[in-house]
Image (cartoon, rainbow, N blue to C red; front, side, top):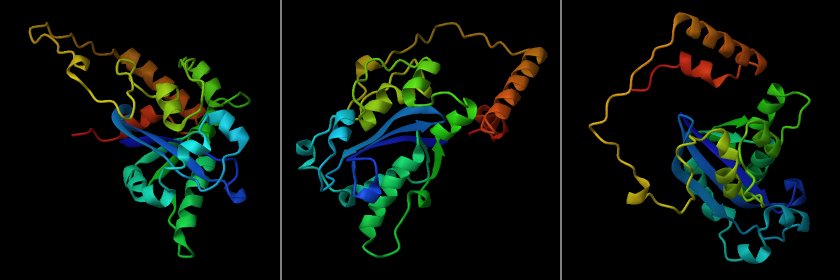
Length: 238
């Protein structure tokens, strides 16, 4: 299972008003575990950034002046996301901007769409179904699921995901690294081959039944979106 958590930063709120993408950040998940595979790109939007947007992400016009245009990076970006499930909080916003960029590239021809390359899961819609009547912005979800994002002060695309958003998915024993970091010898801890084998404790019939009841309840509350039930009905990975 290959999924990609995606976020964008933009010059403003509405592509219909001429606003453009200025940053794309992606973090890859394999079987819901964060890999070291990242995609991050600043983009020259060929227009000024709104002051309000700049206060949110801290990206300036001067920083983007020498960056490539979207058309220059589109092929590599689409190749990165191809065949994956995109996980996006408030997906219509990001997908709307991405499809607008693809439309701009088409020059009157039939434009490509992000949905032509991958499926999309909107975690805001999912959160609203699971927590109706509650705040479901990322900060509220991080607080609800005890994800520490206190060190994040600006909302950069990759910064946001490596700081707080992927904490909802990552293995807590494998901290996410930045897009430019590499694994060194000091990052690798080898276990003693002489160590005793860990015991395998199988659940009892009562525990399995209680587990199934809990999954059924989660599936009911999430409108059939319980991912653990999908894992149990999926064929094993060889």
